[in-house]
Amino acid sequence: MDDAEKVFTQIPEFLEYLGTGCAEAIANAATPDKLDLSPKFPFLCSKHYADLIKKASEPEALLREILPTRDELANVPGFVDDPVGDLPAGKADCVIQKYDRRALIVSTATCGARCRFCFRKNYPFQSNPDVAKQVSDWLDTHSDIWEVILSGGDPLTLSPGKFRDLVEAIAMHGSVTTLRIHTRLPVMRPDLVMQHFELLRELSARFECVLVSHVDHPDELDEESQVVFGQLKFSGWTLLNQSVLLKGVNDNAKTLESLSRRLFMQGVLPYYLHQLDHANGVAHFEASDETALSLIAEIRKRLPGYLVPKLVREIAGEKSKTPIF
Image (cartoon, rainbow, N blue to C red; front, side, top):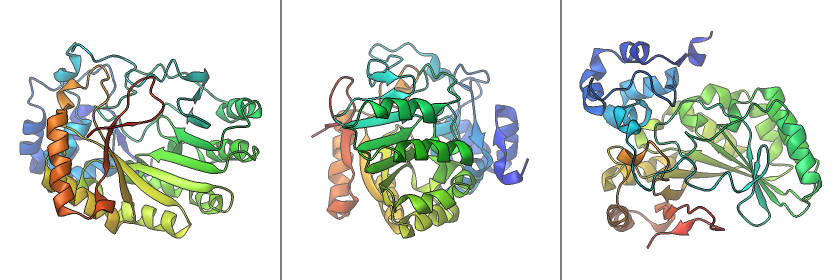
């Protein structure tokens, strides 16, 4: 395995790789009695993200996103397996339709890492070897769909062949004019994004192309993410970012201000700041609405309006994201 492709699936090996330089941050993020070495939602972290942690100004914040703790075992009222209503909105094995004339494709269960606050950590992913055909068959009978959103898992973890097959299946349907990709790979596995670049460069001539990255902390952005975003922007993609407000990670105005500014320096506009989806096992990340509103008010004083993300939450059954005022 190429070193850039290395992933950690065992927590002790991951912590050993981080080394003594991160010992204090590790202890603060998850004391030994709180660390869960056999989590139900399995541990996975890329070497690239581990390297970001090692050079981070706030390594503890990034560690909180990735290290399993016993807090995930708490049974908290109001936190459920399907907090955003994905399952009732399922239209086919891999198609979710919540919004008018738009469809989301659950393209794969694979991610570049397993974030501990993931809203799909309890989602019943099914092995789906022929996503392209299933999507094409569904679009054959839904000619009103104008935007297709590739999600997962992470769609850019698909092999180049499977990713091309999926995109070609969508492109066969003339009603689809916008292709949107949601991904965390520019900060988790930029090498996997680069393997798709020949196709990604072509797509802006066939669709209106939007990439929504998921970056939660400014320390997740580096030279490699800048290359990914720069090449996409040069190729005609619209680049947006959505973050989740996470207690102990980015729940302060200084971090959010820095995140917006660093995203913009890499060609990406802040888009959404999500309140936490109430998935089982994530309650310890929640910041209150009062905290969220206070933070937005503070960064609005510090930044121009185009760098202030919209504060929203997703409510199961609603036909759009719900703004929080």
